[in-house]
Image 1 (cartoon, rainbow over the protein chains, first blue to last red):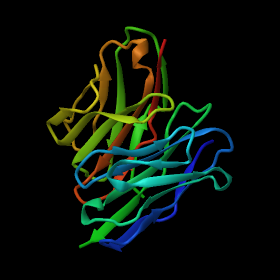
Image 2: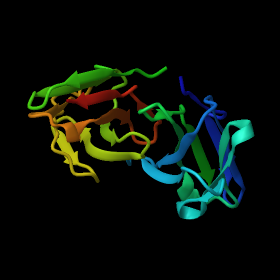
Image 3: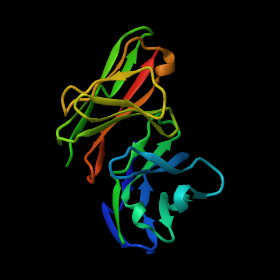
Length: 113
Length: 111
């Protein structure tokens, strides 16, 4: 079965700090990978996705993620966070042969001004 | 650990049948959401609620309807299922400033 592990449940950063949120999945075959964000009081939004090709994918609002197949990882990064990035971030995986999307438990990011 | 439950986990049903997907949470959250996800694709918001007697349509048009008569319960109904409704339906809840929690999803197949 596919599963997703997010390493940190809570992350606190100051503005302008760099961000990296870890995500590992457990499936040895072909995968589609996603990062979603949920701002306080709002619904989920797609940040970025990886289906194939360049393993470094760029998303909205300056976010990027790198797919490292050998490490089963899809870490989310941003060079300089802003207060408005305060939100919860979810990694998700859909493995070939599985019709459903599996979410990690989420990482709550708090950016202090 | 938070509790949000969806039933059934899997459902195979014939065209034209009426179905209700159940979603319940025990955290007292005001906000609840329904998302739809086609195989291999990203989620799309189809309904949300900010509290009892409050329901709104989401970004993706859906023939389903929802109700919110009680805080803990947010069922989704399809009056007449069609094969185009085959998808995964994911329920979630959250409170302002708090974390979001997801159910395990209902995998619906309409034959």
